[in-house]
Image 1 (tube, rainbow, N blue to C red):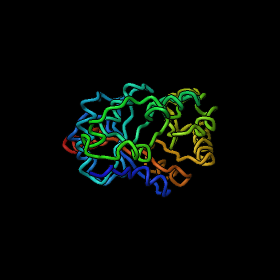
Image 2: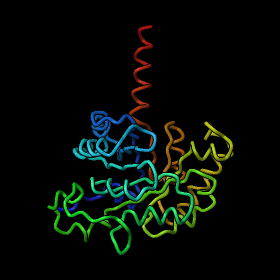
Image 3: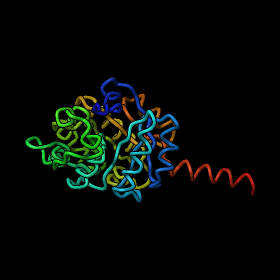
Image 4: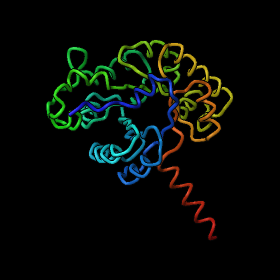
Length: 253
C-alpha cells in the first residue's frame, strides 16, 4: 500500500491558490457534505469547535472519500495532541497562537520522529494504513505540512524568525485575534488591520513561505488571493447552515 500524497502541500508548492471550508460543527455528516462540494481543503477545528480526537477521527474518514485535503487545527501547540492527530492520519496541521521562533520549533519538533523531533513512535496506526505502508517512516516527513498561525502583535513582530524555522511550511493569519491585539476587537476590516495583514502576507512570501488567511466575505477572500495568499478559508459549515437556515425561514414569515 502506498503512502497517501498530501495534495494540499503539492498545491502550495505549485503556487495554486486554494479555497477552503472551516469545519466547526463537530459532525462527520457535515464534513462529508462540505467535502463533496469542491473545496480544495477542509479545516477540522479543535480550538474553537466541539471537536475531540474521536470526532476528528470520524471527520478524517468522512473527508477521505473526496478530492479535498483535510487540515486539522489542534486546540493548542501541544506535543501529545499533535502526536495523536498525526497517528490518526492528519498530514497537515495548523498550530494556533505561535508567537516566537521557539514556539515554531516546538510545533515542528512535535511532528518529527527522533532525532529530528519528539514524536512518539507507533508502528500500527491509521497514518500508516495499519502497518500496510512499508516505507512509511522513510516518506512521512515529505508528506507533512506544518502551518503556524500568526494572531498576535508578537507573532507579527517575529514573523521572519518564525518563517525561518526548519519544518514550517506556511504561516496563516488569524485576523480576529490579531485585530483584538491591536485594539480593534471584532473589526479586522479596520484600515490599520488591512495594512498590517497585507504587509504580513507580503513578508511571509518574501520569506519564501506560503501565506494563508481566513476571509468569509467573497470580496475580501479574492482580494487576499490577489495579494498573494496561497490558501484562504472562505466559509464554514456553521456559517453556511446559519445563513441558509435563516434565509429559508425568512421566506415564510
